[in-house]
Length: 132
Length: 289
Length: 202
Image 1 (cartoon, chains in turn green, brown, cyan):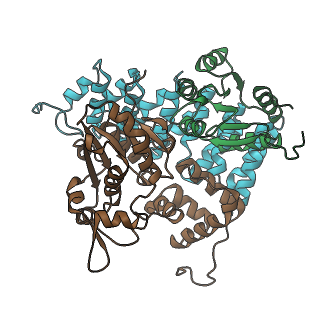
Image 2 (spheres, rainbow over the protein chains, first blue to last red):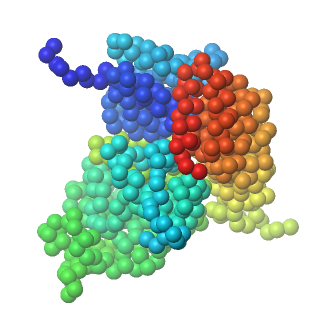
């Protein structure tokens, strides 16, 4: 109660191979009080997720060397605490097929690009239990 | 540095947007990133490289960099990182080897079984000798297994030096005086030569990571140290080297990269393996569909 | 008729017939070794292309692409292009990555790819431009964004322009900004691209 510093609401890992997407999400989430790290593909994401605690991973589908689905499957089958971290999958696809595949791979939620700042922050708050 | 343009010789101005462009390119290509506080450091290094390549502008330099003309990426990365070799460099990976990797590996071997470790590139031998020293000093079971250490490099001059095993103070700076006293003998000029027993225990060979024929002679390694070389390779060479290294590892074998390197920029063939002391990579035990 | 040599050689030596036959093996390791043995073998492109079309194991697919990249001709590009249309995200990404390493061989294919009727293909094709000469890349991507209606395709093109775009891109970017003023991410992306390009002195 006496705490005067505002700790980050939660730690979020943004995984997307587009530097513009990472920049956009990071600035939106940092403004909203989240602490944000980044990765460029599923392999780097695995390295980060296994090294530091995160409250949410936001992962794109189309990435080089390890795509979003492969990353989620690898994450969920890892023998580590990180295996159960909530995951928000973001894709360019709008067909129901991809949402189902996302769930099957282990995503907790699925959004379609382009995602606007307000929409992103709202979903991240819900998924991390942070207040808006 | 001489200015070839004559006339006004001053450092090329680099705008914040250009630094951004550069940082994003570097991060995408190598995984190396810089915090805000390191901005000055980057500006200095960029200015150095622009001058060294005699580029008239940042844009000209950036085009050169993107095309990796004259191995500019290698020169650039070298300007950012300290790339000297010495004993017990990046010792957290050596610690990972004895604290974590060997436990897994040994559990799959019979007593007296062979454990094969490869240092490639081994340069002038600091790395393979470090592996041997570290094992003797830190692995209680070192005598229970037949440990084979191979050190390979493309540079035969370096290999000759490695076989000779003579080092100056800088190379030995991380070793305690006790360790040096026990495993090295002093030479007249103040350098030290590593014991003959250790020199004979490492097999030094010439090998080229990208040459599948060379690499076909190496199989069944439990651990490969391939540090600070893949980051300099172009995209095609990285793929070829990764595939070659895959074949050189036993299924389940481990590969350690350099501190600024990540398989995320090199190859999808290996799985990420996180241990308390280090992130290393593992050849999967079996294929998945 | 060339002598048939027994055993496997790791790189492009001798008669490739046994290796080509092994591309059909039910065993993934045999297929992997066969692919690697065909590395650098120009005549093997059709066999490698066919193998790529049916290979289910990711590491063997990677090796086939590496072998094709090593050859790096138009036939290699044609062998990999169909995978841009795959339903498998991993295969699509692997195809983009492979094609990106062959900017010269891919160049003749860029115009049709960037005007493909499938927006996903156009999107992936923008990545292929990244390793090309800056002026050429700018020309190709401006051509795309001038007529592109799909926001994600534009976003992908803008991402590449942020890295390689020359000042020639500015007019097309301004027009794009007007077209997508109601899409927050795109407005953001375009403003960054414009700032990045304008801030970079020519």
